[in-house]
Image (cartoon, rainbow, N blue to C red; front, side, top):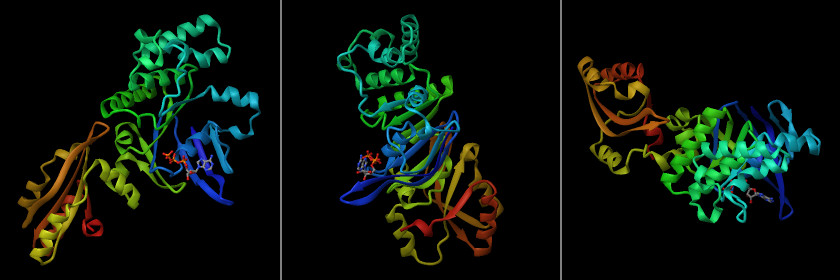
Length: 342
Ligand SMILES: Nc1ncnc2c1ncn2[C@@H]1O[C@H](COP(=O)(O)OP(=O)(O)OP(=O)(O)O)[C@@H](O)[C@H]1O
């Protein structure tokens, strides 16, 4: 478990304080894949580097499995760092060493006996699917293969925590997918806690259990993937969600309705799991004197679970519309669209 308690990192910039990380509170549970998303400069890299004390907090404390690493002596810290692996956007491999040597490196410097090194490297290269590349050099590998080496190296010392700093940002979408699947397998098979930072909403959507959104050093919103995708509160979160799911009513449709005038009863319905495929509208039309006009919608998957959003206009007498709404609300989340239509 990783706990951030009122953590700030303050740099000096042109003689004044720059709060790269600003009073952050976060709890990342054991075995969880936790994503931190934010635009460039939001403070994500600084946040992740605070976990293994590549940066020291200026204020607050970070507990790793209940232990405040900033209180440890240097030898103690070296020991603890073996429990925290890290992978990077540009892989940071030793170019003059083979794949085998790159993965063995953290084991060798921590004094692991030679026989054990060989066995562990074999095992971990097999896990990441690179057994046949053991004697090749990084520049003979694709980006995805290099990141697999990065992951193998990070896992060599059997850590409990894996920190991922924009691990898929240099990769094409297909390779990104395969690396994210590998990270999921890492969590599932080794029960690691994974903290990944990224500016790609697609990456967090694929693998994360929960996410935090950062802006100007602060965590502005956090929650489960479902919470943040179905009901983002902050405008920055809405922008990220929009980058992977068109969930706003297109202006052309909205202005068409406005031109027709009269009262508008437009709602966004969010369907999750099995409810995404329920024939709810035929039920509504049968039970109430209401017409359901679907304006816009899509069904997608979040972590393999159906997730849909529909924007509908309900037409009929006010009283009937409200009764119909009450019925719909028993199955799905309903929001009025006017609030975020602009
Ligand atoms: N060593 C440093 N000294 C001074 N300022 C720094 C230092 N490291 C980061 N910063 C500043 O802290 C802020 C947050 O930077 P950080 O790299 O953590 O953001 P980020 O969200 O990871 O962005 P990116 O994705 O572009 O790396 C930025 O304004 C950056 O310029």
